Image 1 (tube, helix red, strand yellow):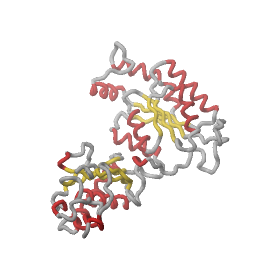
Image 2 (cartoon, one colour; image 1 turned 120 degrees about the vertical axis):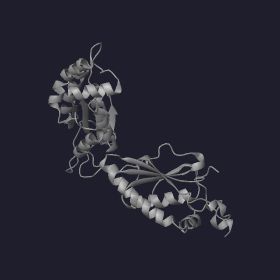
Image 3 (cartoon, rainbow, N blue to C red; image 1 turned 60 degrees about the horizontal axis):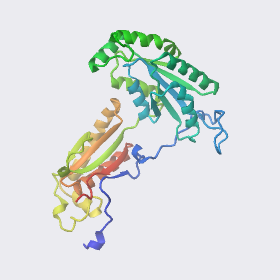
Image 4 (cartoon, rainbow, N blue to C red; image 1 turned 90 degrees about the vertical axis):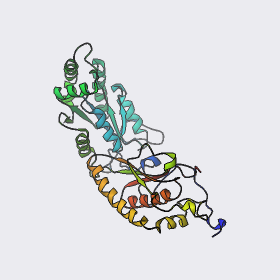
Length: 343
């Protein structure tokens, strides 16, 4: 073996790339093709807005999330964000038509918009009513999701986080809840979907949102497989950690030392060691079990860290193999080699 035969261009530290043959991960910037709202039956809905080169722009699908403070608005918004919606939190109601117009001008890049509206004042409520009338005049299809909860449940939640209700002023939490409930009474009556979260936990609320907005496609689990070196410290964002130091280190093989786990000879050396292939098979089987549980619990992202001493040989080779298996099973996967090239 000569240096010329096996010399390959070294990749920079913490290289991030999607797994070949697998769906693109969100971090790659690639988006799946999405049918614009209003074109499901082949017909394009007009907004009355003319954009440069596009006489009629497709109207984005719009969902307005509102409801009682402490009832789970942020969780509902996060769920839609995980389903691929463009989410804007605490947008003044008067700006909702402007946001829809900008989405229409995006040429399909922003096809679904969710707006979280925090109605805490009379003027805000009047602006929201005017905005809804404006949207209706422009034939914009919108849905209002209203998060409701009992007074007892809301009081417990505010007391557990030791924060005042935004409308209680100098009074009690129940006074703020009563004021907000009265202010939102008309909006609740106009809601297309009311979700009572009094007895729901976070996972159950996410499941209800998924059932309403995920359509026929189940929400995807997205995985990051990260190689790392223990001598540089554990990844702080790892959900699962595997240690490959039970295998012989290619660092002590002179002809393999200069290369990485991306090199075919290094990968072959690693997986020819006793226990290497068996580990990969059993760990992949374990991940299938864990992934099913994550999906049931509404978890959308998982980081799997694979470590060795320096993050150059064993962990890199194993991460590549494991990521390829996950991608083959339909998990959106990206590979990150955190410490490769640091030596």
